[in-house]
Image (cartoon, rainbow, N blue to C red; front, side):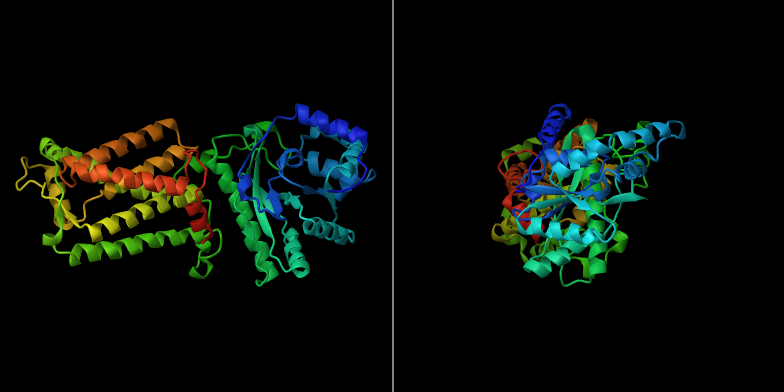
Length: 485
């Protein structure tokens, strides 16, 4: 820690801020590396620096505009950066305020744990002090937005702060991590996202673009995944013009994905913003094994799955509605999260992969078949024609456990944990999952035993993905390992 002498007046002011500034909760602190790193957040006017000064875990130093530390430079900088966007009729007041706050600014910023940032020859002192703090094990907090709109959450980032990582690598031989931070004053919370590591072997210009792009996308992704709230923007505009994290245009059919997939190339598959695409490979592996088990295991080697309860459940072709709706719900859920919430996509896809692996082990070592399908349909209508079509391409083997049920558990689990989803939608998903599970028995695609066996398979996946506690965002070791891969 710094040994500089702290003004008692500053301590008093900081205590007042602590007492009267809204108390903030910290989420995602587990994403902070144990050692030094750079935390990059949305400025959200003065809320970002205040929140980080009071609540960032561990020893940390915040980059601060050097002009705010010098009495003669404060007025011009404060008015230009804070208040120049105010209505013309009241700008005279803020010009006066810029002079009034100058002594207070000098007092605060020369006593707080900050590093002055300059845009002239003094910039080298900024980098020198930053490297010293990093080598001492501290974290650096930076708010690199400037007045160029990026989206409704953040403005574009100035990218020269990435150069710290190259200098740090030259000094230590270690690659520095950058951690995205979303500050949400209206939710009284700050959220740390997953870090991105500097690649010393890549061209610096590319790393600037890659890391800044990832950080802006990550901050935006965190924001839009949260409950509806007002975003405090970088620009000091009228409060009535503040955006929300999910603006009206984002709720339309033409919603912008949190990742720009148009920039995807297979050569970029291992980059953080695209690495989740690799999880889709689980479907390729599954279909290969599905084809092999369906065609290489003779029916006579399969165990017949049957229970007394199956005889009590009548065939009802109208349950084909729910049985077929499963396909739509599965694809729509994966696609939605793939576009708008990468974390939830990972959780759902890993849940599915786990159930696929367990099911394939069962299908190989205990091959199963059912004999429940009616020889003749009791009625002739559209829905019996649908079931006849399904029977034609889906053999009655490989049925225990039911993946219809296991996948449905995963779908319900991820939607129930997804904070932005309305309660009505969550209720609809739960209802659909229950009806889908029942439909497998009523259309005679599965035995009640298949449904019962699928339940512990789903619970196993739930445990491996989310850990021993049910709280959302609680990560298991398996999920953390797969995400690193």
